[in-house]
Length: 139
Image 1 (cartoon, helix red, strand yellow):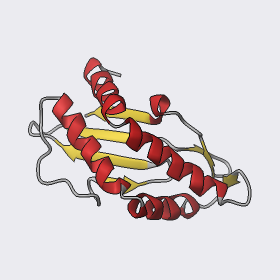
Image 2 (spheres, helix red, strand yellow; image 1 turned 90 degrees about the vertical axis):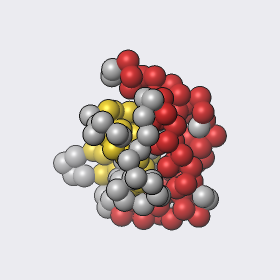
Image 3 (cartoon, rainbow, N blue to C red; image 1 turned 180 degrees about the vertical axis):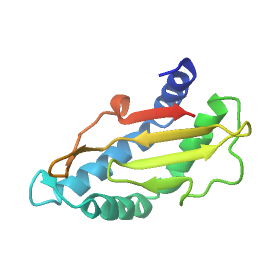
Image 4 (cartoon, rainbow, N blue to C red; image 1 turned 180 degrees about the horizontal axis):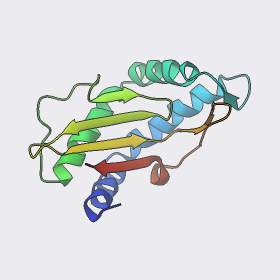
């Protein structure tokens, strides 16, 4: 992780701790609805997680995190971010926020709620803390 990515990650954890905890709580709710501690279908992760995040108003909060991250870079996101692709995508690992900044680089913030295991593919809630939830990259 670069120094800039580390700075962004720290700023996001400090500024959006409540949002991070709310996202973790949503992930936990999804996982507790499963019949076992793992599922094999990605839709058992993505569909209920997206529903809960939108129902709880967290999609907009996640987009605010993207704005905070770009501000930590002394940049702004090109265009007006909205809580929908390409800015916010709910994957089988968790929410991904991404935006292109003025110099053409892309900030990607991943909230890693679920671990993905292969052979056979299965998904399991990681039960992360706000400190280990975030993955940040600038490309």
